Image 1 (cartoon, rainbow, N blue to C red):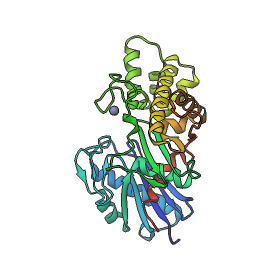
Image 2 (image 1 turned 90 degrees about the vertical axis):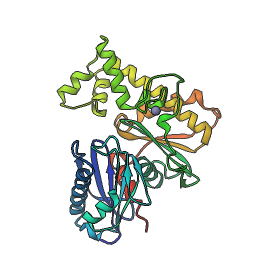
Image 3 (image 1 turned 45 degrees about the vertical axis):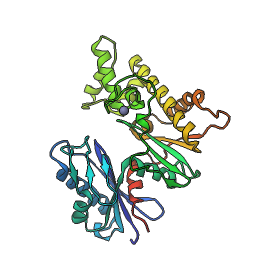
Amino acid sequence: MADLRGGIDLGGTKIQTAIVDPGGEVVGEARHPTPTEGGPEDVAAAMATALREAAAAAGVETSALKGIGVGSPGDADEKTGVVSSARNLPGWEGSFPLGEKLQEALGTEVKIGNDVQVATEAEFHLGAGKEFESLIGVFWGTGVGGGLVLDGKPWLGRGAAGEIGHMVVKRGGAKCPCGRRGCLEAYAGRSAMEAEARRRHEDGEKTDLFKLMEKHEKPRLTSGIWERALDHGDKLTEHLIERAIEALGTGIASAVNLLDVEAVVIGGGLGTRLGQPYVTRIEQQMGPHLFVDARPPAVHLASLGDLGGAIGASLLITA
Ligand SMILES: [Zn+2]
């Protein structure tokens, strides 16, 4: 049982944990909903519980793990393990020593990294990007996150690189959840898409989106609801998804023009759910915007799916 590592992907709706062997195989996993009330202490407790469950499934004590990595939203300080301004988590506007708290609870070394960056590195080392030396990871979900690997190394900039969701795809365009205008995320992020759907629905456009949401007892338009509405041929859904795909094609192509990476790997809640046909449509939308169009990058669907974040987090623990 030596050399097993733990990984925790801390998301706004769920906490996914995994126990990973040295070959990158998942030997135990557990998933819990992220607490919607309370504060960082409660989130940390739920994370510890989920990780213990995964460890039990793998037949190992948490203290026997080589270490545990965490992919966290917000501003995650890799050196100190402190997470600040994780605004989609309850009561997490300030700073919280997440690494230290989990280390106490689980009895082994804990390292904290950025959620999108660790998911990108998982695809780079073990998933759809493993044959490439440079890539952009695009995570199409509630927001649109991005991660970069250049020349085989993660590129963090001064700590905030990879914010592909805030590439401007239309000057003076739609309002983005970040408060600015015309960002990619304003067109393709699931929360921005939900807000737009609601506005149009209230203005009298017909859609089954909100009926489906109620029928399946969801508090919001999840990726599964968007997929169902597409299956029903819902016109507003088709329109908003097409608009998202056009924005993704524009934004990703612009990033490729700047960095000339070998590959683009597309994952995230919506990306994973909608799958290859939609990745192909994004690739087609990139085409007209690529400056060097004779040599387009490979565009792949992320291959580690929902577990990519937790597997990537486990890679924060080095040999
Ligand atoms: Zn923005």
